[in-house]
Image (cartoon, rainbow, N blue to C red):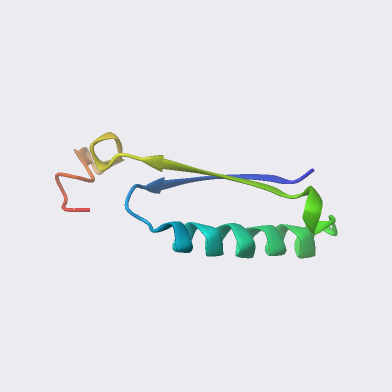
Length: 63
């Protein structure tokens, strides 16, 4: 059972996340020869104040 765990800075729409799940699932099924129904994708939204880039939070950087 292929499993993808994806971390994103919060702020994406449900539609964007739905499309990401669809495309990642299809890519895993194609690349691994796994049945699509056996793929799993987990998206974790991370608050911008808890995401660090170059020693600063994403919030500080305006992301």
